[in-house]
Length: 269
Image (cartoon, rainbow, N blue to C red; front, side, top):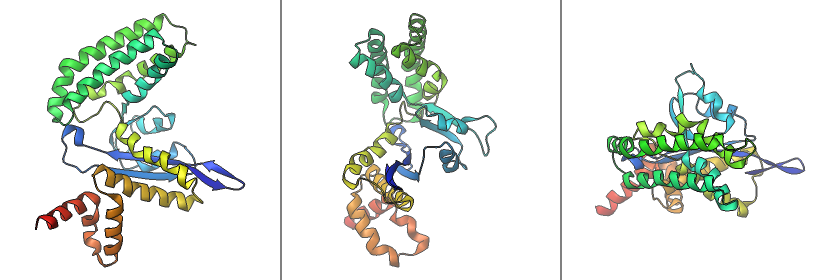
């Protein structure tokens, strides 16, 4: 996102973290959290996730590498690669260059996504069972095929670079097969920033770092509303009207998912 600097605009960053358990029928409400920074340094996600351990699904940006180091405290962060990003590299060459290997790679990856659409919303156990039975043979065959094709290509080939991107992260790409809670892609986070990319055509830039931090807060609230099928304008209007007199110990009642449930209860009554 552009932010004013002396005589110019700098390209600042918004970092989006999304939790969405709906693909595996989880009970936690979906939520988005955005942070602002003046640059794209890896120290920012390391600070954001300083107390976190567990899975993290993202693209292969090198700034995340510090999160995956062995012996990390308070615990490991386990990389889960995004098949949408992996597919995109092949798709570009399939569309623009009509490269046969890229076209075949896209076809094989699309078979994996087709299985995922069938099991969306099922329990983690059910998803893992289907993946072990149907997805794993396809990914095993895909890996063998990619390695075979790579031997035939020059290192300078665009398709070879796409293959290398995938094979170098193969364990992270296939981690979802063994855990039904994981998705094939981090499209949930991609969707959370789409509105920002569209909206900045209207607001053009942030005036300062303070404005960037406030924008991150507002986008956090708006995107969380959208994830919970809550009209963000109605939620903001109601919360702003009530929050001054709302008891601090019950502020969680105003979170979009609780606000929605409370409104539904009041309507039923």
